[in-house]
Length: 91
Image (cartoon, rainbow, N blue to C red; front, side, top):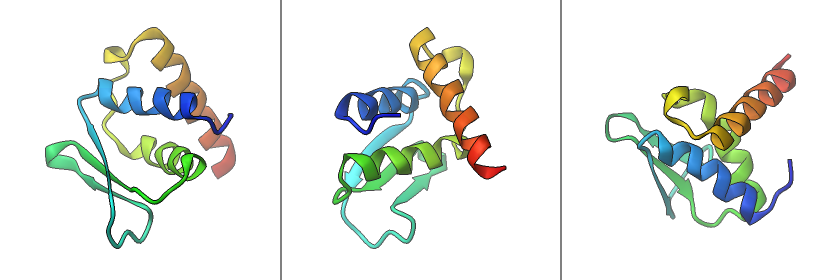
């Protein structure tokens, strides 16, 4: 996976298509992000560079309530690819 703004935009689109709001804020984040499940808000450390943002969102995706059927075809492909790559890393 390339660490470009385009890749970041695609990953953000997956999350937004499931009605989550992504906010970039400053604060004391132990893991670089915070999830407010009831409000479907993901707060990321705004001081992360593009690569850090992508890595954080990729780590975060399996924890979110993603409705696969509500994603566009392109988002479904990327989401599946991300889940497969994260499963390989964990094994």
